[in-house]
Image (tube, rainbow, N blue to C red; front, side, top):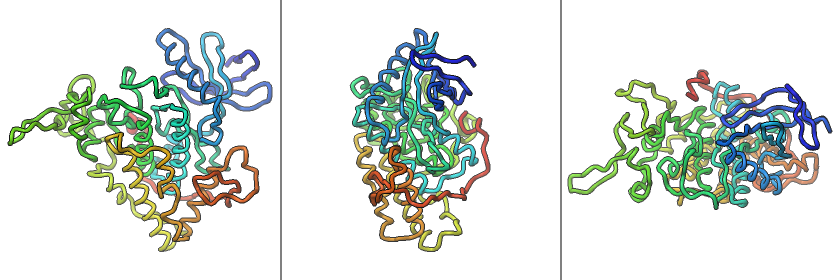
Length: 421
């Protein structure tokens, strides 16, 4: 590959480390200091101009803000070379989906899910402060920083679908959010806000716990059906107000003459959002690994962790932790976004602060606390040896002893195509 030149730097491409709908990511060696960086190439063209302008505007705003300790990828520079625009980013290790794939999509222990979720909540809290909606939270857009030195330290990446609050009111083409993580307000055509990101994060947390997407719909109709089968129908108020309700629901006259919304039968979604869905009529296979009749059933999907280092008290603590995780996921996956928890409130939830486990003083608590503290060490203070703060949501200064989990429970491996197709 040829060298890439900006006005002040020369970048030597080493490998293509990522490809997406709107470009590719190159691992490059920066000639001035030998640092490895990531170059995100944005192809130019009339149909891409608005998207490129939007991403450059957002990344410029993030670059001017202090995001070092907000678990958002660091933006270094942007420039144009020949026919392409480039964003220069810090080089990170791998994304969460790649980590899942390496472990045969095994369920992640609850304490690791907390570590990841706390950091993403910090990122979303920072974005809310800056009036930015990310609009594409998914495992592929959460990068591991350095798993060996800082287990489960992550950063949020890819602002190609992001926007400022003031620029959005109703969903328009192209549709935002990847389908598995798409919020009800986007699916139904309702006014939306930054709360769409909290819905996506709840889906990601559930996926890490299940080892499989919670709602892996093949179409928007199937996505809506999966949500309704687990969480019930949206309220009549929302369905009456939404612009896409008739694509997924129909009004049925009841015995007493009242009209009530009902989900259209399987395979009868109208328009381009219906498509072919699973079921006896359509003949396509069930895409969910777990068919939950309520989100409360997340608690009982798996048995307690079988770690030889855990005693009876640890098992009880892990079960309490799982219950607490289920509760925060339910608050993130509230169908009516007005009642959905926001990032700041979620950072004060017992699942994140560990207050529900503090009195137990078990080995499980110690491991959970230590891992969370290590992941939250500020980048610039990683070598500082001052006393650490005992609040997990505060900025800890002194890392606890290194701990690396050696045991991950799992299901038989699935193919990549069966998972994402």
